[in-house]
Length: 166
Image (cartoon, rainbow, N blue to C red; front, side, top):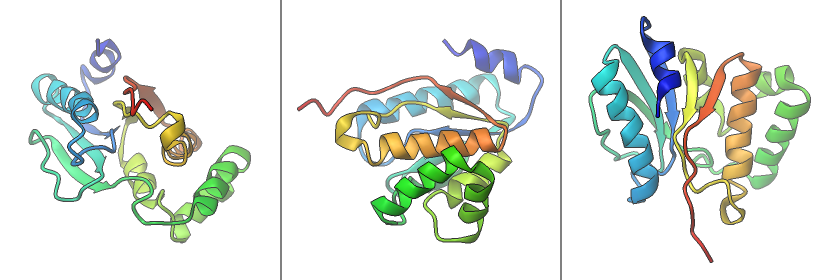
């Protein structure tokens, strides 16, 4: 299942940014997708540190290799308009968007810092890429992916949760 990780990590060390965002929310599916990846690293590549985001800052990581946790996208409560503009700038003018994220109040600032420290980014899964959570999921994950690409980092998506189904 995680063959791309085995190929990349066989001789490496460093940090990997694994995003799930529901960490700490009690969402069984999303947390299970993140924790399966965290334990895979812990058992197979203990030299790799994991950085992640969480919806609840009291979240306790499942294993010792999760070294950093920061608030998930949208936690700084910037406006939907600001997040939409950041997404647009990242798509059209990535360097200007990076300058903005570094220097101003942006929900992407923690992601920027973490992406710089990471070898690559894994989105472990969340039900965020659906119509109910489009402001968070589509713009949020889209912005993180565009930011990572602007910083020349690879992004892997290993899962997508379902629901809520209304």
